[in-house]
Length: 180
Image (cartoon, rainbow, N blue to C red; front, side, top):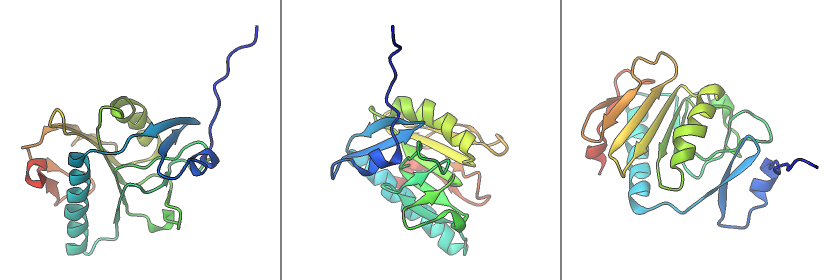
């Protein structure tokens, strides 16, 4: 009896999706993306403003890219993600198509359809790809999980009304409740 083999998808399959349909590709498996809700988009917009302003005011070299923005995590044909926010400090990773390699900081806003992927699959994938910092923001529970993959000291769980230190920037902190 033959073993059932799952289809392995590639980046070409991502680009072949019908207009308006979005998906991410992790280790050859497609994860379809639902349209975001209003609170999701408000958080993405506010994070983009706050982080972008901080970088500008401090004459930083990093850039902030909100989704949809292509990240080719491992520079291979089987991994393509669109984090809600990608902060990239190594501009040599940037191309016209997106980012080749791991961003320095990724923020994902959890929705019911992405929860398992954000807390499990992406957590592992981002860590092994070389992301320095990963935030999982959950508007339903008002909890943010911060993962500092460089030194682990600032890793932890925070409430929306708490001040959260940004690991890659010593002088930046964010209180989510101030963004809403």
